[in-house]
Image (cartoon, rainbow, N blue to C red; front, side, top):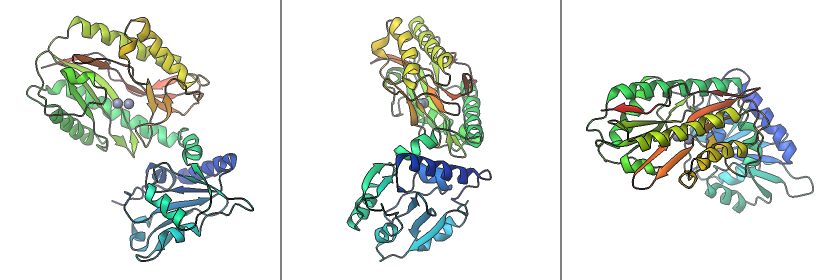
Amino acid sequence: MTPVEPLAAGEHARRLAATRTEMERQDVDTLVVGPSTDLRYLTGFDVKPSERLTVLVLPRDGAPRLVMPEFELPTAAHLPDLVERVGWKDGEDASAVACGLFATGEGRPPRVAFSAQLHARFLVGLLDAGLRAELVDGDVVLAPVRVRKSPFELDALRRASGVADRVVEELAAHGFRGASERDVVRTIQELLAAHGNEPVGSGLAAFGENSASPHHHPSERILAAGDTVILDFGGASDGYRADLTRMFQFGEPDPEVRRVHAIVDEANQLAFEAVRPGVTAAEIDAVARRHIDDSGLGEHFTHRTGHGIGLDVHEPPYIVAGNTTALEPGMAFTIEPGVYFEGSFGVRVEDVFLVTDDGAERLNTSSHAIRVVD
Ligand code: ZN
Ligand code: ZN
């Protein structure tokens, strides 16, 4: 399999052009991107970071160049035509090679933006190689570009979420008797792969008291009668992530679990109904939070309402108090209110949504109902 993915015609050109427009707006002279989802987004090159320097150098007006170890050049043979490859040899000063490609600031120190996911050692290496620049967080340029999804990206997100929904239905029929949390996560990853999602991301299964920990790490805990179960997973399609959370119960749920679940589900629905262009991310968070507050459970809703989703499972826009980002068509994010009682149980209901011209499209169609399993 080639590490450079083929994309719809013109997709990379559009992304690079939008990035340049944003560099112009932010007065950034050069953007520097290491192995990361930012690099994958801009070039399709999906490579793991190593100790050897690989960076895309994108000057505002010049050609984008991928600086990388010369002996690895064949792995980037299928880069989009507009990206030039520049190899460096072991023993050479790779940082100096990269620095030579940066735009000058024309009478002032250049403003250079670094992708947030660039390893610190490479930034330090560039500074040691003599880079004199005003350093800028690359998200200033890349976040506003990546947050507006293209039709190609929206299709990939829809596909990924569709597979996650199918896996929920199959899990319900599966039965978990005698299984540990890790067993269930393994089953989830197998089912995701069987239906065509890349089984990326760790997946979460939390039984009984563990369901009160929102980011629980799956353990060898075996399912026991009466356990409330949170399953949170997704995988990816063409790199674009799914992320949903559904509730299961081993045996008939306690009425209190049903009551809390109904409140959390209503918060999810109310937040969904509030989504439309122009509404801020903070307002969506407030809608979900107000409902849970009014139900007397506010102190148990301990995290933000959601997060953007794309090539990263967590990316802008964050659906959180204080985020004044106005929603726009093409943005994608989760709504996932949750309520947790330490030592007892937790409830979360999560779907992915796309902002449309007049509201939102819910990508996850599987029922929110608690699934009783044995
Ligand atoms: Zn999730
Ligand atoms: Zn999530």
